[in-house]
Each structure stands twice: as structure tokens, then as C-alpha cells.
Image (cartoon, rainbow over all chains, first blue to last red; front, side, top):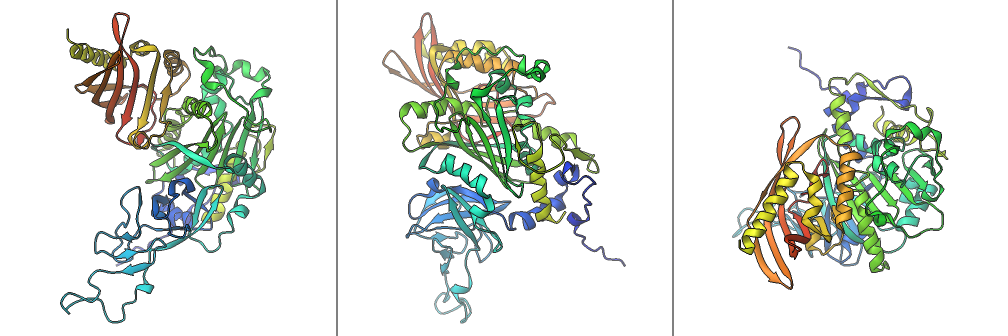
Length: 415
Length: 153
């Protein structure tokens, strides 16, 4: 009798001709590829965003996070050092921390009371020496041989990153000069949490990774922007990529709007633009570089945005092959005055699950997921702005950011 | 009609306007300087200012309705509100009112889900000959929105 041999189906996928200008729809629908991503990508040589430093300010604070589907807990120990480890007891594998956030002197698994310090080192186990001299662990049991599986942690501008791989380069090298500079600009001074929520989107996580790097769609799908002249492709702007193409910055300068011929026939630009309450878009200048709008992506699942005065961090987490949780964390600076906080509140209306210029992203990726069902052998076509992976200074009518994502993805996945 | 009955009527009328698709009526349930906010329980409890949607005036609500009618893109769907009974207290020239709600979302293919549960924290005043919301804070039990939120709750 022939015994079926398990095949590594992720690697039998032959990437189509055309390299990063083609994406096989199968990568959004194949459970084997999804499983392979958990191993090769999320546990690979990349930095995963875990949480914000402001969420774990005090000794003993913890916060749950995810790396791919792996549950992670991030802690601050009694000396102020930040640790991250898999939230999985070294004994039977149960979750150790159950609440989303908390504060404790140690972390104890509820199942058999295995107890860990805030760095994840096993301190004690219940009934180690048995009960009334009977039972207990073997004589050679050594707590030092057991611990919560650690991640390496680095903090950059208040963003806490973790990696499973020893091969991951330091965060600043991972980001590159251009990306590191923009994060410093937006998050380099003390900030504080103004609110958060999340959104379940019914699509593979990579469709959102594409979507957020897609400067071509922004003014076409999100017609509120075009209409109210917040952001149009004919404003000065562009798409900057890191040297490896994985990270991107889409930026615009609101003050430089010119009427261009090409927009005359675009539906979204013809909608009557008068707002009854335009004050919510009033801005003050925070930086003297003229950039009023920037969406920065950090591979694979982090986004930092400053749209007018709306400062936010988004990140997304796979919750299954066609299910993704998208988190929105709104921020302000610690020295904001009341009026500035109010303006950030007003402009938070632009983004999020109900965002005037972002709510469409809650369904558009699902439309791709549904539209490509039964077409796993077909490909997406990505040649807007050329076929290469390079910064596009001066134009956002490009898919170069998406091509850059796939370049990085293919390297890590061996596809 | 007692105040309680009038407030129950206001709740029923508010739910009817949204569920029947008469969204242009929605801003009229608020005073001109009325506030409307949808926020998660987590952020509300932590005293954080930013939720999921904020309107600081009736005019902002009118803009929301015009945006969802003419600019925003989403699959057609409707809501069914089940407002709970109000608990009210007199405060100043109006009433502080708390109530529970449940909202189902019905998609065009018939898929019906429990879209939101939570509580309304309202300040209601007499405005001319009607009772109107000076503020309505929608505190969601869950931090998660399924797909997107475009129609008011």
C-alpha cells in the first residue's frame, strides 16, 4: 500500500513569469502557504511590532501581543527592562497570561501553577517534591531547564519590536536610513495614547499589506479625500521605499494642490465638495518640511500614519487564512494642549473602522478575497508606475510599494 | 405623556429613522451643538478621548450622512436596533439617561449578525417643543468592529 507522503506545498508554487509584477491568487487562499508563513516569515529574520512602550510603562506591566498567530506576552520587569516571550506554559502549553493587559510580580499558569518571573524564567512548580513525600518531579528536575520561549526585543521611538531569529539585524538597520528618519520625525518625542479599537476584515493578511502600500488606489477608492482636497495625486508627493523595498512611505503636501486635466473625468473628483462643518479638517503645522500626509509601512504588518494632525499606529494580525484583525492606536504628544488634542479627536474621523477615508479598506480586500475564489491559478497584474521596485519621487500613481512587499515576501518564503 | 414615555418615544423614533434608512432625519435628533460619539468600553473606562467616530455638532452629522450617501463605498446593508428601557435622572435643565442596546446588521445576501451591543449614555434636553440629545455616547462592549462602520448606531 502506498502511504501518501506529506509534501511541502508552499514550495511547489512556481511564481509566475514577470516576477513582482504578478501575484498568484493562490497565496491568499492556500492553507499550506499560510502555515509556511507562520514558520518562515513571522518566525524568520524580521522585526514584528509587538506593542507601544507607553502601554507597559510601570514595572510589572504586561500586555498581550501576537507574532503571526503565535500568542506573545510583553512585560516590563522590576528593573525597567522589556521582555517578550511566547504566552505558552513550558509545561503543557496553556496560555499563561489571560487578560489583555495587567500588572504582576510574576506570571503563573493557572493549570498547574508553574510560575515565571517577568523575564519568563521558571521560578517554581507546584508539588515539585510531591505531597506527603509521594509523587513529585524526578530528582534531576531543574527549573533552569524550562522557561517561556523568549523573543529578542528592541525598542525604537516607543515602538516595541520582537524577533524569533538570531539573524535579524538591529532595528535601525532593518528600517534603513529613510524609514528610521520618518519614524523619528513622527514618534521621536514623548507621545501618549488617545484611544484604540480594532476591526475584523475578512481577507488574507497580505491583501491588507498590499492595500496599505497602494498609493494608486488611495484617491480613487477613498473619494472623500479627493472631494475635499485633503489628498490628491496631483498634490506634490511620492512614494519612498527602503533600499530592500520592504518598507514604504507614501507622502503628500496639501499646500501644493494644482488642478490637473486628468482629474476632470474621475468620478470621485466631481462630487460637490462643500462640507457643512469643514473645521474638523483645520490643521496646524507640526513640521516644517511641508509634508501633511504620510502613511509609512514597516514590513510586514506595521503602519505609522500622520494625516494632517492625526497621529496613529496601525498593525494587523492574521487570525486565519481569510480573517485579519486590524488595530488602530491613536496618539498625541505629551505636550499637546487641549485644543490640539481636540483637533486630533476631530481628525480621527478620517481613519479607523468608521474612517471617512479608510472605511472602504474594511471591505475592498474582502472583495478581492471573494473575487479570486476559484481562480487560484490566475495572477494579479501590478505594472502601474513600471515594473521595478524603486522610490517614485514625485508620483504616487504607482504600485512600486506593493512590488516591494512581494520582493521581501518572496525572499523570506523562498518562493 | 410622562417624561419616561417621551424618552422611550425618542429612542423608538431614533431607531426607526436609522433602521428604515431615513438617515437624513438622524442629525435632527440632536441639538444644534449636540455631540455624538461611538467609543469602545475599553477606551471609555480608561478615560481616553478618541473612539471610533465623533461628531461635535449637527453639521458634522449632516456631513457624515452626505459622505455615506455620496462618497463612501460599501456593500448595502441595514440595521435593526433593539433599544432597552431607559434609566433616567434629572440633571440641570435636562436628563441623564442610560440604556442598553443591541444592533443587528443585515447584509444584502440576508446574512444577519449581531453587529454591536452596548449602552447609550445620553444627555437629553427640551429643545423647543421636542426632546433632543445634547450628547449621545455609544459605548460598545467589544473593541472590535466587523468589517466597517458607516451607518450610525
